[in-house]
Image (cartoon, rainbow, N blue to C red):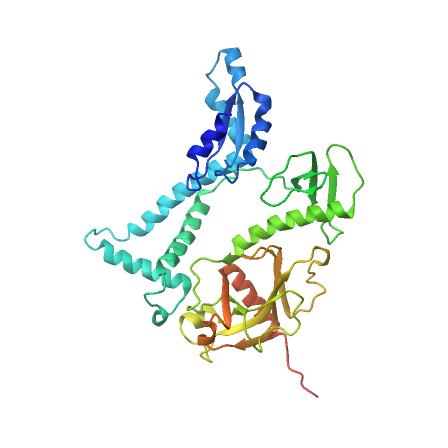
Length: 400
């Protein structure tokens, strides 16, 4: 009655991350509180974790000496709280080390602004690889400087994170889903939990080349059905698609008038690069594949961006991609993925056999090729490596 109105009043989208420690005599009501605040997700930013301390215990014993050590133990045993606190501490320490490592290179305050501007400019230019003659006042290099600092921050954090803060279960992973009688809970909407299912991902056995899924009902052991299995897979794949989009796709600082390796475009008009075997309701795309070294040194032999043809299509749960049976000219690793503007989980396919060149002016024309996103470095390197391997394996059909 008191806490939720208070949260609505003081917690906004910009409030930051936080957790709640419930100091209460009503120890058994903690789950009621958790269920109620889940329904408030549109009113304020929810806490990352909620843990409880039994107020009655300390009042009964009239002993508060161990309260801080007890709280520390509670936060340590709670995975959400433990990881959040340790991660935040690592970020804070890494942030300070990173910024000092660059600013200390310029000890003279009289020259700091100009020299720092030069260093940040070179870091930003190096991060993107954009040639000097392609930089103009309209391209926000400050964002690329921040991305370059992010790489330095990751290095500092990795040096500091010397101990494992969570003891992961190395034998299997458990994912708990809530369900109602009428079906699985909808995305971004938590429904009342009437029963609980545990979906267990079993590690690969020595003699089996596949991952098995077991559905265990922790209330009663029920018959395993295809519907339940597919529902569980769909929910987990949806979560994985959100993660993959954050790991591999970049929507920040992309501009139609800047053609950069890794840019992915939707083909809007007629083009010979449109894939000839588009599945129904698919989006034809191309990806700019000029090697970064050629791009940064403006050494493209044809003076045109090199592009690879492909398409985006809905991921069919009953027909998951199998790289062992598909043709080897397809890059079909990029799934599951969640794209902006798409309701369903997607798969992105590239066809190594359809490689071409497009004039830069055409790629800057959104009526011909609309810029969707840029793939991040790790993904771009994987596509480029697999494309190179495919091309190198074509061979020469000599008649002897």
